[in-house]
Image (cartoon, rainbow, N blue to C red):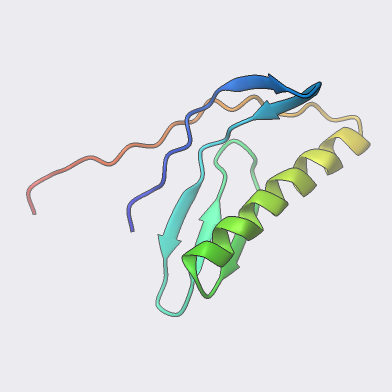
Length: 88
C-alpha cells in the first residue's frame, strides 16, 4: 500500500491548536496498520483501512495528551510522505 500523505502544517481553529502529521498506512495480510513517524510508538491497526484511520486519529490525540500530561514536548510535524514511481 502506498503511504497516505498528510502535509505537516500548523493551524489555529476555535482557540485550539491543530497539527497535521504524516501517517503511513500499510496493508498487511489480514489487516491494516498505521504509524506516525514524528510520534515514535504511535501506531494503530484494524481490519479495514477506515477503521485504522479512525484509530490512528485517536492514537495521535491520546499520544499528544500523554506527552503534555507528563510535561514532555510535543514534536513538531516535520515528516512528509510521497509515492515514488520506479520501474520494477
